[in-house]
Length: 366
Ligand code: SF4
Image 1 (cartoon, rainbow, N blue to C red):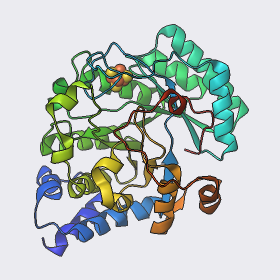
Image 2 (cartoon, rainbow, N blue to C red; image 1 turned 120 degrees about the horizontal axis):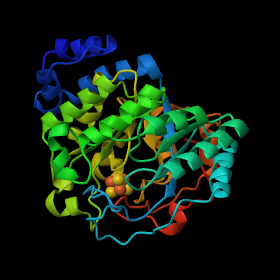
Image 3 (cartoon, rainbow, N blue to C red; image 1 turned 180 degrees about the vertical axis):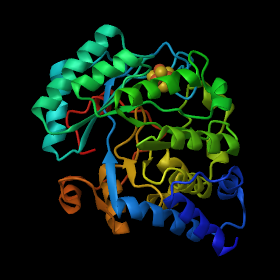
């Protein structure tokens, strides 16, 4: 591939110009792409807006359990037969304590995730009170992943002080009916638009490896560009046993570390100023190339995902330090490394989290 191709990608991205579909597909599939040149072009954009900072997120399940929706990738969905730890919404006291611990650990943002289709009016009122309470007590950003919401819900959450709302598009509109039948892509987009209308910053991402085409990946990343998502988690599908999708697709054979890096680079080029987060599945699919992912991406999840384990905190922090990157936190990277423990056997991201991990007593910086 001519060196001009990489220069053009950087230039267009820095101008926030949409790449052509042909350019997107070339990034994902062309065998003459030179990996280091592509990473270097994406890193140039990442460095312009985020320097060498890495922001670390830790998922905090505020409610976990079987859900009436049938998202076929999810262990909590109605079509999954996986045995998981169910629990209702944590108490207000428990959530407030976690927000306090997050603040005291130097966290920039406190994030709450709820399983389920979406909150009732009563739940929105309760969440609004909780958010207002957290915001008036601690100088911390609050992010919420509540499921589907409407304009009124969004206004109420915004008035309470909600800073960011997470709701993933997950895949393209074309592919959506293959991964869920209980709600539509349009429903998901409406939720994001309600949040935007209310003035809440949005976090929305995708899951790669669910049997989609390269065009689907280009489509969803272009949609996130149009939606101006401030934060984009890029998940690589973890085929947890018992999920409907794990019976029909095998991402372990279809996703290579090289392809995952290409997706992260494309996410960066199309969304130059967004926080691109390497989310679930990095251990499984990027394998020995995990560290390279932080050249296009500037954020990652640490300490596992919603229902599955991942690399230990120590391993993740060590990787960031070895790269010579810094973390976006009040805490110093070396201080955090000293606080965490080196383990000889790393948790496997195909293993389910147990109850203790799902309801951690200590919240970490995110
Ligand atoms: S992704 Fe969310 S809405 Fe879909 S099944 Fe899982 S918990 Fe329910």
